[in-house]
Length: 479
Figure 1 (cartoon, rainbow, N blue to C red):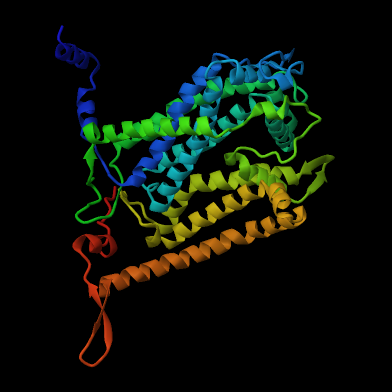
Figure 2 (figure 1 turned 90 degrees about the horizontal axis):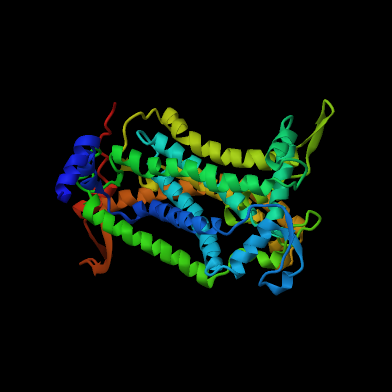
């Protein structure tokens, strides 16, 4: 049977040829920023491939064993099966350390790609109608990947990740009324218990990846294909049209090359730069905490929130409520994720803009939104930096209490100052654009007039330049 006949027979029975034909001809914008999301997508591919490799050798058990592997400094030390198998992967399995480091680096890049992609969508307004659902899925992906990163980071049961689990246990028990039940449900008993690693393993390799495998295609493919692709304002562009190259062969060649680049960069980082050397930390012992402990970057803002919170607590009805843990553990991430999730609907209500938007904004054209975004970045950045206040104090010979108070003040004032400064910068850039429209572009050529005065020669804007700066955005399609 010829290939064409087989394809025709399949199409007659399952359909899809018409959709596939439209998909191959779908136009994609050529602007570089639209590839930022591809970084996260292809880092996720590397995470999956390396994760499958690691599952062949990792033993998610808390049973105590005496280590007798290749790493001599830890021979004869009693440790959990999880930690012993992690050492075995690192020193006895061919290519195991490379796979471990690629898995770790790709996770860090995965989360970094999500953050950069999310910021690009926020500052350009691509979350507006009809993409609110896609925005919510993106925020959910951010939270799920962050949570899964924490669980995977904890699986080796080393001293550093064990300290993180101790913090997680403290956060759970601080929740009023149900905290002890939550901690018992996750840990299976008193900390650390015998069940936490197997349970985290099931969540890390089954439940959360399953959710990601559903949400990522929905976010990146299904909804994107059903909607008109966004693009920046330029000459001749309309709200219902897309200017760009077709998916096949142009975009598919570009994105395939991007996949190879992401995989190559991850492999290079894993080869050259050491990450998470668990053999230096030793097995987890509940009575021991290493100095200068730092989580992965995506959990740094929670660490900073815990360090900055004053020791507040109160007693009500015979129960002690520890605000010093409850507020940073729930309120700090709650503000971040709730603000991200609700912002499209809040902006739509305040602006009364219910139109369909396929053209993107320049950040300077929406000063308040840009100011709010920068304020959020500063809020996150201050908390993230505060997570290393002890390291900063030790290296710069500053009092730990002084650094803590500096970050507390910065957390309160920083976002407000950032909002106002950003808003004024956006207004100044708008004024600059108006001057360019009125007077043209400065050429750097100085001409002396008959009366002795000096003037600079200015050239008028081209039609393409004027379209970006002056032409109003085409009227949105209302539904």
